[in-house]
Length: 302
Image (cartoon, rainbow, N blue to C red; front, side):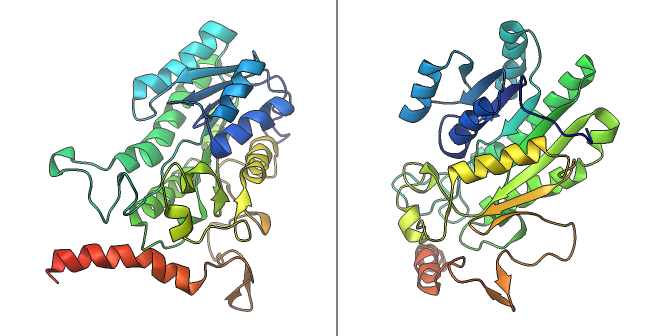
């Protein structure tokens, strides 16, 4: 795959393609000449619905990424509908870790999951899903004896600390480590596995996905990149031989860079300080921390 892997005439499947970054990549893949795109998601936003309705080469398949049978059905649908397995698999579905939002979801601080759950749903979505999708993709490409690419959407949180969202950070650390570990799959099995790690990105994850979190975490267009920019980075990571299997590709409003395995600096560091406009203001950090201190104070009996 040293000569690159153009999207043109390829079959693409993307989990989480019904909104945000995933939806932006659906459009990017088609603009690059993808033969067809399969959107795997629980539902479509209005924008994604317009794409599906206007393009018969974009197929929506309702998918719960926590169910492995649903992931396998994506490959089965590609074979039955398009005559071949996908060439490009993009694991974009993911959830953040909101605290004190209108409907608390899987997170560390509020503990909305009961003890009998025996697991965090966030881990199933953010970790188990991309790992299993990769394994299913590998089986499929080995059976067909053809090359393919898996692109996992991670986060800069995958190599930084996030006290206010520790499970989210842990899940992104997990997929970064998994991707690095899969580097040899390109030469051994013909499956290139890469991870694209955006910084803060303007997507529904900050609004409808976790109501109030955008304000709480100080997300503004001045510090955030766009879904289109991340989609472009995914495309580059998939197509370019510059990013071999195991690559961690960062995209922020400062641009794109490859993260080496060792001795990395935080994004945007200039003379030991974060570049202006890239760091979250200290007052926003305290605002995000506030609800956590309330929770732990109650648990401490204060």
